[in-house]
Image 1 (cartoon, rainbow, N blue to C red):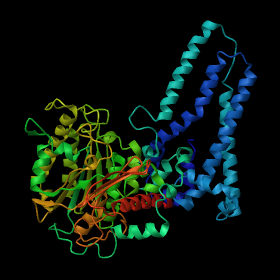
Image 2 (cartoon, helix red, strand yellow; image 1 turned 90 degrees about the vertical axis):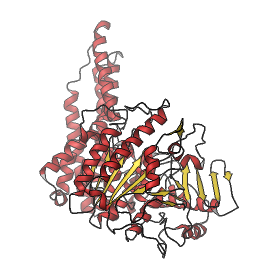
Image 3 (cartoon, rainbow, N blue to C red; image 1 turned 45 degrees about the vertical axis):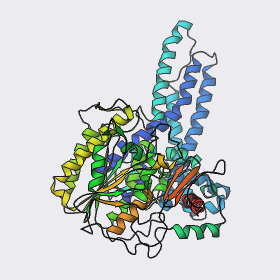
Image 4 (cartoon, helix red, strand yellow; image 1 turned 135 degrees about the vertical axis):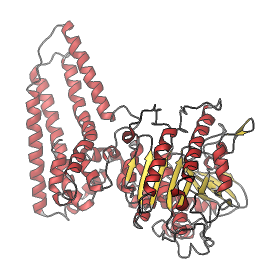
Amino acid sequence: MLLQKPAFLLFYHARAAEASFGEWLGVLWHGLSLDCTVAGYVTAFPVLVVLASFWIPLSQRVWRIVLTVYFSLIALVTAAIFAVDLNLYGYWGFRLDGSVLIYLSDPGEALASASWGEVLRQILIMLVYAGAMIWSYRWILRLFRVEPVPLRGRVVPTVAALLIGGLTFLAIRGGVTVATANVSKVYFSSNMFLNHAATNPVFSFLSSVGDNENYAEAYPFFEEERRKTLFEELRGNRPGADAGTPRLLRSDRPNVVLILLESFGRTIMDETVNGEPVMPNMQRFKREGVWFENFFANSFRTDRGQVAVLCGFPAQTTMSIMKLPRKSATLPSLARSLGREGYRSAFMYGGDLNFTNQASFMYSTGWEKLIWQKDMQLDAPTSKWGYADDVVVDLFGDEVEALGREEQPFLAGLLTLSSHEPFEVPFAKFDDKLLNAMAFSDAQIGRLIDRLRESPVWDNLLVVLVADHGYPYPYDLAYNAPLRHRIPMIWLGGALATASRTVDTYASQIDICATLLAQMGLPHDEFDYSKNIFGATPPHKFGYYCFSDGFGVIDADGETVYDNTGETVLSQTGPQSERLEWGKAMLQTTYEDIGRR
């Protein structure tokens, strides 16, 4: 496996030449994590064989045959994946994944775009690579000896084999951190070619084999023509959607700070304990800034909320597009749109951005710089998820002020984490652990905003505070209830021409991209689902969210909550309307869109 990355860089030498020698070394270094994971899978069976050989009285020849056959098969499969991936990358632009299996039903068509020269070359590469692997395996097998040993003499090697088995499990898992092995672990650069070069093709293929279900047929509510007609009425980028938009900004090119607030549900923000607000700073900012009264999260998970906020793409019911790197890389994004206007971008998180493929998603959707737990190395305690918000907001404040001293405009993002379960924070204000953690995060955001307010960067700064998702509080709040998904959004900063304003329009996280870009006078044609909240013309404004196999739609007239499993409307308030059809059209279109990507 050590040869895969140098061979890949050599094969695509023209693109590799654009990178520095240090970046080539970065490909090797960062790629080691998935190489170790694949090595763990490969060695798991031999470890079991060695363990069995201590106790099962078979001849050395039998054990050698078992391992030789196993290693030969592994070598052939690995070499085939490597050779196919090496050639297909030039056509596809991404590492081999499970979608290649779709084309095996018609091999002739699959090979139609490749010349016979290419086919023969890749077969030769496969044979050479497989031969090298088999030779190395046979050399290792020479070290394998099976000799009868007394019962007492088997204990020590058995314990040693079990310890090796434990290390093998850790390699397969990807370490001891919260994030298990995934493609995101090797992403280290804003240059996607280098990230792809660091990716182990065997892992990329095997980890995505189950990802090729037919998403387009997941929710066949309508015939295609009817679905198109319904969605056209909801499309956020329809002609004239920005007509009559009031101007809230003093500048067309403000610096933008986007803060995703972990689990900041609206019910928690409004909570008081003995008359004392749990989130006094959010309440203060609500009065000072532009407050969105009827705003909703699109999901109940951070990964889906991030995609909704940063890409204007709706959440899914039973899957997450963030976990499908090839598909999520094709999404439109706020970072990419602003990057075309000369904006620099940086995103910070005190935890592990490998979790749910976040790093892969962020880099592939245009974020230039990611700063997370592994980069911080702070002399501070960590929780299960990473560094607490108090130390991270200080670093983020430094980063924002540093970006503000440069000539280019910037987009800076922050994801908080202290208000995530298990709510372990260095703070003791309320007895309830949830409310105490929320109060702690609120205090840190308050410190950050007050610091930025005193900084020169404030004059041309737009700060967007928005939750990544809500939280079931009170604790008996139903998982599918609209109130469960209601969240705060507040705009602050010196770039605002108006403040102390309440926006009553119903909206959700997917509408942030179009709304921000429209305020900056920039097109948002790529964002089909994102609506300009301030647009005075259609499409109709509403909040939309998904839960497990269901959705909710809320507008000024009422709410509709639908459970697809039972094909039942769970809740319907206000006059009868088209909300049910809107929700079905949104969900069906989302999944058909994913299927096409």
